[in-house]
Image (cartoon, rainbow, N blue to C red; front, side, top):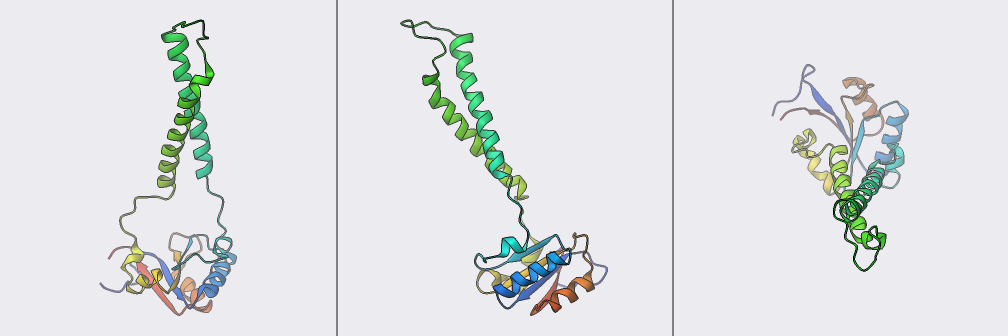
Length: 184
């Protein structure tokens, strides 16, 4: 694998930090400097990282709710149509629209629709499946699952400039700064 040159397109710049406190401080400082597309990698959840990266609440719960309500309505009206409009049977003088009998299917429809649409929404919003990530080509990055802490600034960020961003990461206390090429 050849090292990237100035002309080569890159995914971003990866910086390794000594510990979680340094990584959180660097993420906060990058956010204060105007960087938006910053990712962090650590072997365990780091307290304060979500605030440092300015995470917004996810829209996944709203997708679950809307899909569940619409699916429940669809399940209820499917039974209503079958029992009252399409094939009405008057058995023992019971009402055609017997809502207590419709509750199990309505509930199951809500759960099924909510779960399917929520899972699909989660997959799409997370841009999955992603079979390969450019950071996987960096040999030292394997330590992110055991004892290393990384911050990556993506090249697609509006404030990104190779030399300025790399210099800023070094100023923030990175022990190593590496350019991440787009291809292997």
